Amino acid sequence: MWSGDSTTTPDELQECVAASGIDVLCVTDHNAIRGAIELAEQLPCRVIVGEELKTHAGEIIGLFLTERIPQGIRPEEAARNIREQGGIVYVPHPFDPIRNNLRSDVLDELVGLDLVDGIEVLNGKTSLKSLNKKASDYASEHDLAIGAGSDAHVAEAIGAAYMQMPDFDNPADFLKSMRSGQPVGHYYDPPRQWKPRIVPSTAD
Image (cartoon, rainbow, N blue to C red; front, side, top):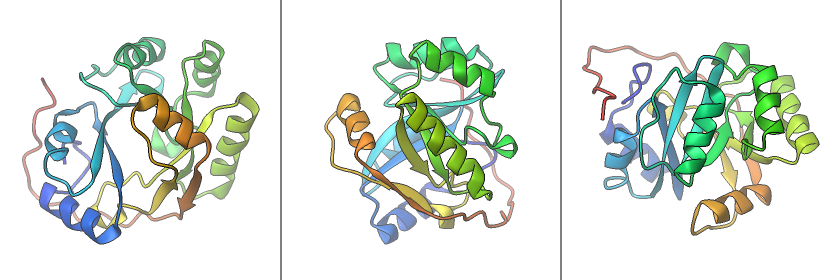
């Protein structure tokens, strides 16, 4: 709910997580981490604090963050900031132009600088399987860890896509587990029923 384009409330999130049996949830609001920090104390599962950061060249996700990263900065600066926090640099929906994907030339540049840890090969809102396949091929070519995400903006979409992977203790262990994990899920992008609400400030 801390993202302006999400309608999910904390109570709805708790219900869906409990019903789905999810063990670990990555909460990656747009340009905010405060909601993820608060939810870590409320949800019946482990929460990885993350942020889906809008750069001038598309979106990058930082996982295991302790501080919010400001939007609009250069992708390289964003990736280095994530790494400085001990986090994981994850590129969501890399070839889906509808999802504000990171530009291909910028992705290549970051990979060349060894600033990308993982790439999403299954996105619950990417309707074309060919785009997920392209991401999977890219990950194999560049030896990147693979991931999956529901990209849930409504409660019922939570768990539409996820990773089955071994347990982990820290970010490095998480990344290792991603490499031996398996993406699971399907396309699911139900229409959102907008309702009046106040979006919390993303300012720290």
